[in-house]
Structure formats: structure tokens, C-alpha cells
Image (cartoon, rainbow, N blue to C red; front, side, top):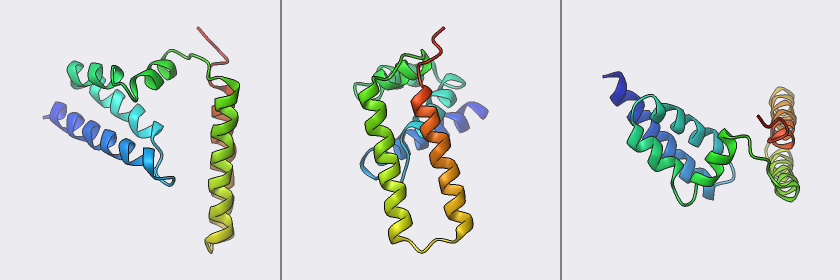
Length: 121
């Protein structure tokens, strides 16, 4: 029973990750990482399919193996992150609490992206 729950949640995460590719609000990477985790606990076949996928496989492989992201890609990723947050701050009527939470998340994600691949095994 647990296996089927993990498979269902993994498929849901892949679908949400795919939607996140084309929508700026929904993140892609966390959903795909969670899907890979869930599939690794439930279905070797689905896990392998995800890691060998033409679109996502390379990124997941690099993430799991701590392969460095080129500096240009890090800069572009962080720039898009802050452009999205900046537009959210400008266009949305947010409370100070929400703004502080988003700033903390933005800084944490920026640090995470900036340090990806720095500590190779």
C-alpha cells in the first residue's frame, strides 16, 4: 500500500514539476527532487525513467552528483529569482510579514544556487 502511495505522490510531483517549467510561480526542481526520492523508495523503473528523461535527467543527475553549475547559469537563475520576487513585491499587495518571509526564502535559495557544486565528493 505504501508503495502505491509513493508512486502516486511521485507522479503528482512530476506533473507539478512539468507545470513549473512553464509557470514562474511554481518551482520545478523541488518537485522533481521529491519525485526522485519517492520513486527511489517505490519503483526502480520510474526512478530510472525520471533520471534518464531527456529534459530532466541531466539536471537531476548533476544535482545528485554535486556537479557544478556553470557560473553564467547561476547568475541567470539568481537574476530570474530576484526579478520574480521583485515583480511580486511591486504588483502584489503583501503584508510586511509575507515580504520578510519571501526575502528570507530568496536569500536562502540564492545561497543554495550559488554554492551548488562547490563541495564535490
